Length: 377
Image (cartoon, rainbow, N blue to C red; front, side, top):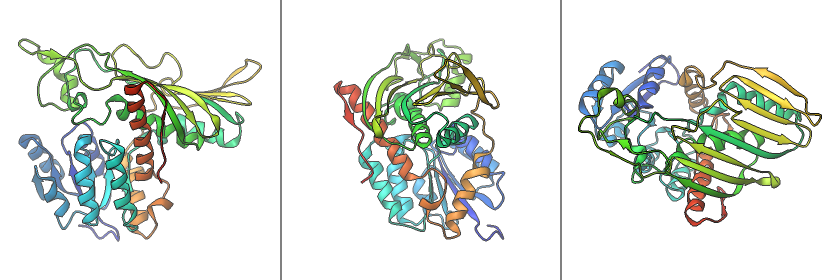
């Protein structure tokens, strides 16, 4: 393994997917970290991954990864529906955990996953809510905490992640595999960002959600990277159909302390980013906006003056080697004796709170009424 006092032997589930590929590339650059086992459903990409990583085991059986004696850190990067069983098995086997968001298909599964890890106080658990490390949001959090805008009263968020019109269907379009489509995919990030910045949880939501993207090409069993490239391959003889999961949602939300506002989440090709700020925080003294696309954090005051108070790299989405900077250091803090809840990193509690929000939003969209978000207890 390594002479490191806290060597990390990784088992990656979903090793060849859209997120699995870059995660593995980042882990290969981390000192004292070795990818021991990789798991994926397709043989040829899996064999390539094993060669790239120097892995001892390449398998389509996730159980073999979790049971491997040299694996002490399990990375779950599979479709949402495949998280629950693997996470529960990893907890039972005493393995540290990295689990993609959304945690599970529903709050019931996510609650059991959280409970399993909270009962194992020596185990680390990390949920990749990456936007906490986007420079514009870090600046916004510091400004809010400093009192620069007074008491927050309203929050407006627009997360537009337009996908090409000629991309193909993926598992994200299948309600049997995806927790709640776009609501869970980008809504988890957006909600966590807001609650992290303002220090409040949502208490209820009222949502409208729909599938507004036109029919997509059906190339069969492809991952997101491949789906984005499918339009370049020619479409003769390829059928199209609409996805069956939400790809647009408009949600009114209310937070603790009477904070109100709304959020729009979209993967539709015609809701484009960069036209207006992504996040607005309106306070008793001033208002603040974060525009990651153009790299600006702006404050507007009651006299209608506007000031750019922070400029960061435009985009705000590429934050470097995430495993080297945050994931592995957080893991080693727990391996060194800290409780996971003492480590400054998003964990299963944060992931569970995001699941509460996304589940409530999906339910509200179906019944057309306000839905309580619920709590961890």
